[in-house]
Amino acid sequence: MRDKMWAWNLYAPADLRYEEVPVPEIGPGEALVKVRAVGVCGSDISRLMKTGTYHYPTICGHEFAGEVVAAAPDVANCRVGDRVTVIPLLPCGTCDYCRLGHYQLCEHYNYLGSRTDGAYAEYVKVWAANVLPLPKGVPFEAAAMTDPAAVALHAVRRLPLQPGQSVVVLGIGPIGLLALEWAKLLGAGKVVAVDIFPEKLAVAKDLGADYVINGREEDPVKKVQELLGGADHAIEFAGNKITQDQALRLLAKRGHAVFGGISHTDLPLSPEAVEHLLRYELTLHGSWNSSFASLSENDWRVALEFMGTGQLKTAPIITHRLPLPELKDAFQMMSERRAYFGKVMFFPHGEEK
Image (cartoon, rainbow, N blue to C red; front, side):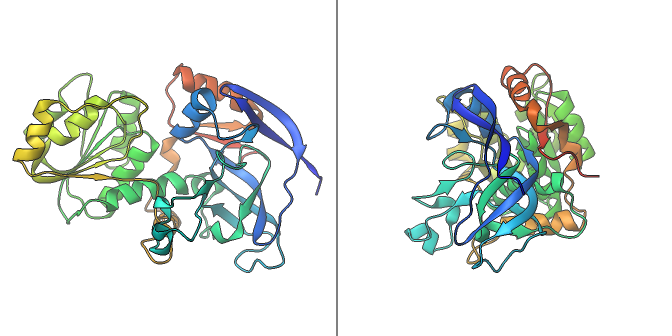
């Protein structure tokens, strides 16, 4: 194998350079993965184009799958040739939350693609302990969506969802669409998708939403009351003051809401939403990342299992399949919202045949 590779280095917000750099050298407990598919997370867009990373230069990208091409002698859970995906969160393993198995709440974590180099490259160095084998028949582009699938599952699992109960998902980007699928797979009755983009609502309908509501054309709160008499559960992924407010006001008494959308602005709740929260005795949950410790529910393994059986569908969510050199143009398009996009996927070594 050659000792150089092509990668996108971030030198400052919006300063992306496609460069030839050394292939990472692995040490004890590590493996080298040939990146076959790597996706764009919503956090990548703001990180690469606006907020930056923790040091420069950084190779970003954390939603990926590929093939193991090297492993340290002490590594036993993967070997050369394995088709894998990789958990990007690198927990400290020693803080109180890690010891309880809540790695997503680690107080001293590292992270591929922001705090250490990630997968917008031909190869990436990883912790072998975070490597997961792909079920038979799962393509690389689907496996590269295990991260958002696990994040979506984690959010749905934060709800005390009972069979037949209704769920409203507000903000149906890739994670919202996957949450919609999970709600159905975990026994929800009526599932409602809310967004302002008709393209996303069309995908939601194809993936099993019973109702779709365009928030630009009608009031989601009134419509949910009309359809369901109030929802049992709501999940908000837009990180927007309007949809967070709506997520509370559309709930029935004793309903539950999960907030999973990140925002960089203030998110005030209206007096109506707060009164609804109090009078209806609502419960509000936060959801962060996903679980993967052996002591807790492993969202990653469940996501891969459902991909392997064909129950969790990812292909309809992918809108762009691009070679790695086109990454900068794609990020400019997404940052400026020049066109509709769902999940954008890059293939450093070409698409899988």
